[in-house]
Length: 499
Ligand code: NAD
Image (cartoon, rainbow, N blue to C red; front, side, top):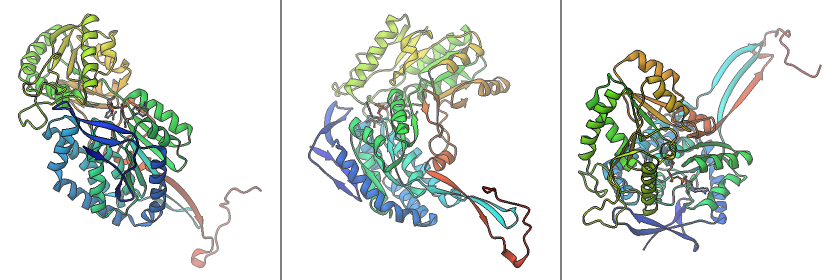
């Protein structure tokens, strides 16, 4: 059986110890095993990273950018192989896996601009002979802990800006689909990254805890479910680290009576069921405003959902593939059971679905539940599967109130042709990322990504300028050269002293 090793100091590293199963969700079998590190492996990675980082930080930003340019090209050249490997472990269809890599690639492109992004600020003549400037310096060794659902994009969100800024990076990817992160590390070495600057340490809670506690790791970036995000945030902060921890989501799509319904339904289908609903920016809640809108939307949604094709990840016609594991499939099914018990109307039932020839795969057909209400636990919790819930409202205010008072605040979308309503909605809604006629409003790489409330712990977002700020600290310098220019300096400007 294939064994997935750690990647330390520019090469794969193996150590006998605990192993985790890596499944092939389309066929429901174990396809590989991943090494689960003990703390000594993290220590080894950090020691190497610390040694390599000093010289990397002294490498001028243009040279660091050149590594990113070469990396960008290598990802593009290897796109299909990476996408197939990713799809085989995650279960998403290959075209979706390409999208996963593409969105990460865009952050690598952003990091290619690091010479410009790291430029500081300068004020000449803040006083007589006095200039003030600020610069950004890398933190040292930093770490990222990533979830299963975007095994290329999310590691790239973190490692590209962190490394371009002059840090060394320790990546702890999800143990459920760990192969692509190792391939990315190999490609970065091929692109010219010095050994030791990117290290991949596979593992579970043992390594996550050790990352939070390690005195030589200066910052932790985390993406995953909210309880763990909060836990990592608290633990890393208690150890004096900078931390940004993104959590779960339950995004609402609000539909006004004037929306273009055909376009809206096409958007909602992709956003609710694409990637089997395993996206933090999926749209699992649809909120029609007014009974007429609800009735028309329901009819069109049913027709659209019935046209969706579930298939194996290499089926080019499939709209989505299996979910990641048998355990996750059972969890989603139990939420559908709960939703029915709580009084939702089961319009389309995805449970008990079996794909011919792939009966052991972790497939679920699309589920559609209507007449869901806010006090239901199945509405309050993140289900993270191909399940769409409809909550009917009478007014836009009521719909916005739903999204604003939900425990999660990652994304939200409004479908309308009314600019004034859209503008009011955008201003009022208490959610971090807002779409107007855009179902999955993931900001482009030169803006930043981050949700509110239990979707994001910490005050800096991923990538964009926040990425640069997170992985650097600013130094402010006030310098005085009183005799410069040979002129007599006015002594009335005095720097505060003990006198
Ligand atoms: P997860 O929380 O189970 O795992 C995320 C990481 O935490 C993994 O690397 C895992 O090894 C580690 N981990 C798991 N249990 C741990 C524990 N008890 N202690 C310490 N570390 C632990 O999340 P997942 O199932 O891999 O990913 C899906 C979740 O991630 C969903 O909730 C989804 O909404 C969220 N997500 C959020 C964003 C965002 O940007 N807000 C993006 C993608 C995914």
